[in-house]
Length: 346
Image 1 (tube, helix red, strand yellow):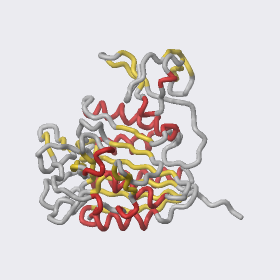
Image 2 (cartoon, rainbow, N blue to C red; image 1 turned 180 degrees about the vertical axis):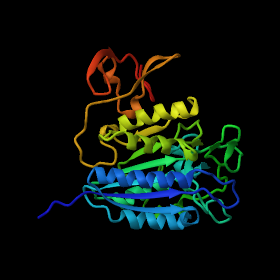
Image 3 (tube, one colour; image 1 turned 30 degrees about the vertical axis):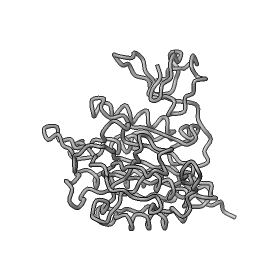
Image 4 (cartoon, rainbow, N blue to C red; image 1 turned 90 degrees about the vertical axis):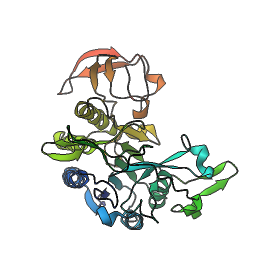
């Protein structure tokens, strides 16, 4: 019997033209870039690609949840999945039942096409976690989420702009409407305890456009408006023919984002299991590779690795010996890790 080839299921969402909001300008370009990059990547890595695209009005809340469930219901053991979003991010006040598991009583959200209409709602992080769990439960699959958006408690409505630099920020005002958790997607399967409500979660990797206190930029790059994270991601996938781990990829993405935004945007990588950051990007069941990180010189901090605890390094690796490799992966010098922080090491 022939061995089944692994599938890559991808849901790609881009929303530029929201009702009653200043439009974003680069989301459809982002979608096209990701679509083409995934086609090349799947072909190069012998994956069968099954992708669906939702743009603007086709990405309402009901349509999104329906497509998420129907597409990823096809996942089988050994497959990979990607949910990619380019659009507005925001925040909402958490119901009291979730205050134990939220920072400052706020929940992060994705603003779908109809989220800010009179009867609309954002998709909050608890709902997204539930949806991932729902489509992956009892399956050995590799799930990745990439969000080229940010969230802000600013009173700004629409895309903040720097017209002189042709830069926009993917933020909008917080959703101030209160909503009981019982109305959340999948609430009937949440677990209520004396301490609060818990959402079932599945193992996955998250790549986010920026830190919580930063803004995700879209800029004119190479003649068209693009999200900084998406441009850096798809550029790396084009430039490197060899496989990259998540840790290697985020290091290269961070270096490009730093240059494009003058050190104002720092993409993030998070995994429920930090060992997952050492797996190959979007490739399931692959043998982990040695730690490979990017090194650069920073005037304020000296020599810095673009990796920290969020990328898989631990306190046990303080004082560890590192080798410096050239472009052909030959070692030409050695050093030691002195300090390990959340986002970088020195």
